[in-house]
Length: 433
Length: 120
Image (tube, rainbow over all chains, first blue to last red):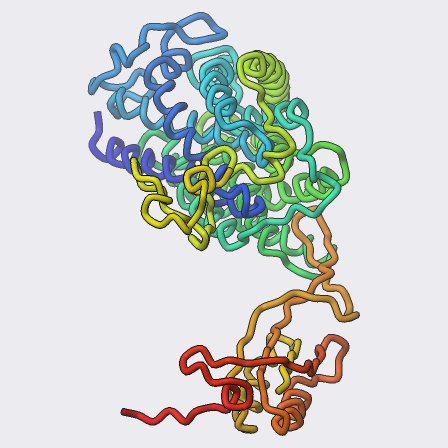
């Protein structure tokens, strides 16, 4: 056990937890105002249901010793997860390792929501992400980090390029396909209602990401410093390239583009953070801008209503990052493995395998889960509710209500008893039908 | 009495208000409106979506005046709201049947004649 390591991972856990509310702002600003709360709640709710599921079962399925494909049940209900050194990192407490990893499960489930905003029934969403975190996230985390087969093959994933971003991106693609487009998709312009929220979210995500990548060293060490500084540099390069692409395409550097570029850079450096040199991180960040930028342009012309471009930003950004990890990895910096650029072709192929396995499993399992959830609760709201907006229909709240015209319903007292002139049917008229 | 309704560019509102103040026109209300007056459509881009914004932000002023105040009011607006580009707006002068001042119940001419407020 080491005090410095424990301190850093404690702080990093709090930083990563902040990324989920940050994502709520990032996604919330990108939707129309009538769906702002619903979209933000899809991230916030993950802090609840996925966090609890992680403590009760998910952590065990990901990190308890077990068969190669999934962890065992030894740590269900946090049995055996105490203040003794963690099996995964001997210098920090086991309990802290559980909490740190829990924050990853929470944000991964929340990431999917960007593909299905403005039309998903909230109760069905809650059921879906709870099951998804147990049956899709936990196994993939086990394969890569929990002693499963991808980790044993030598797949490099420093902080979750495959486990978090490719996993969420593949699930997002399937979820968007299965739910179908919003009724207004490709018929009306569905524009971001609050771009400053998007920038706020992107800024807070970057801040939290220092914990995500830097904390994944599980120690206050040189590796943590490398991951931290690479997380600092890569998105800067992506932001520069994204801005240049914006300027050369439309003559204007957009704010939504800047926020998107930052997130793509963060996604791409995630698997590589502790494995590549800082100069490679700049190159990786710059390269990662191109596929995601053009995928976002292309996606808008298709029938795929991946509303907030989770596939292009996280799926594709994560894939590019995971593959480039196999190109730029440098033993001189990470002490573990070289990549393609340093003569190790096998590393690149292992990365490719890990990407493909994650995509196939995540897509298939997500498809099955959504079919099951749809049997219990219809996953999509009706066109009328979509038109009114999900804030009012799913949550009974408005993000930007003026309060005008709101008549207080007093419990037990009929309004007409106070003033018969007000309305003949006060209770029925009081709420928003 | 007449009511002068003017639709002007929001960025010219302060000029218009200043000019009306100089012309001693008091008593008006404004509202934010959106409209289309034949100006060039504004193009905006959000990720892969490019949209043409058909409606432009405008400010609508409503000024109730007595007949002899119509001309100075209209002149003040025309002089201050003009840029020469398409989209400068319109001024409508509309006859008014009846006016009441809520505070005193005064009618018509008296109701649209400003009262000098003296400090207590």
